[in-house]
Length: 601
Image (cartoon, rainbow, N blue to C red; front, side, top):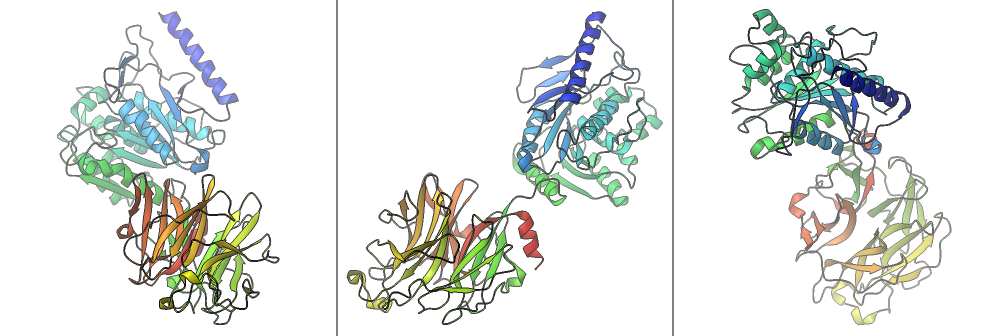
């Protein structure tokens, strides 16, 4: 048996050396040995690893002889290099490695965080010369292993956290307070200090009346003296150098009293260490990622904490371009991180003052990001002009010289040019600019004096450089007065959202038409996707795999929205909020970095 054990350890060591030297990045869920040579090891033929498969969720591991890290690397495009080493709980007698290990790693990966599940040795006199430091040896080496391989595995060595559940929380807090303890001999000078800690219903204290007795007995022995108990009562070991911490506990925890977290938090506070604690009314002990009630919210709270501390990659956000009043003061911008709550930028003052056109207005500003990386904007310059405004920008702050594009100048009887928009055709590398115009004498069958004779259809021109434009053509004639077309590509087709401007019988709603080609022909208009209120200025974007269409409820002087679902269009107007006075705008997706730049204006 002893010869077999030595052979297995030799194979493990060779595997570890091979991984360290040759693999630039680890595959998902790859288990690697933690040690080349386990310190202070006693080989025992009576002690071998046991795995309990009775319950998949709470799958447990006992009698660990070969400590390992199971690696879950996040998508590099969604990660800023943060890593978390996870210590499952189990009273230092077993490891709930599935519920408090693998499941947690998958959750962290969904946030763009690299995860390492630590299968640490459980305290035992049969395999350790000093069982009290055995788990800490593994935790220190886990941090060192991850940190020294940070470049190879594309991790940030300054963003390595330790996370622990229950007794795993004790190990995590022990590492956070004993990272400099010399618990094994090594020439490696890599720091074992975690940059942050996440402690979930943790055992912290070894003091009578507060500790979890089973964890204490397993780690320190049943006859541990007060000096040893104080040393591993980690609330007593906090210093000004301890890492920032996020804590979670349920008040009705009968296994590990909530005072464990409270006392640790107060000790951190005393040393002015950044800390956040969430105490839930109920949940008991061992609720993992949350089961029901308020404790189920802790992963979301933790995500917010990670984001606030720059441990997650800030996701792209959204900007809404709009006007206020009559459009006389120009371009306004608002931003949102989720597409629901919108906040005005620059204290809701103008980013660009209009300079061209008969009335020098900037209504209905439409902005897109083109194939050249520039933001291109068109807008309505007047109620009665025959052209539109145009400008471009690299950053939505500094704009090119404004130009007037006379797209309807060739039509002597053209009354207006309203609500221009741009859509970029990636295939042809062309921009299509389109708008609504009324030409006297055309489409008389839908002319209505109630609309002061306005009777619009959608026209368009194309350009590659915004200097030369093709001849203006009719784009869409739906058989009714139509304005405010906005076109986006969805899958393999183009979808036009449009306003039915019919006054009698009243429509004033948003409908949809489809085409295989950007320049048409487009299908007949669908039924209305908006309600009985009057709506105009639709703009659409895909958020969390659902298309959302925003629109101006102009008679109610507020904004609304509908979301496409498997059951049809759902009105979500009550779920969104826009700056007061927002008028007919467009939505675009931009980077978090660009939003931060805009916030500084």
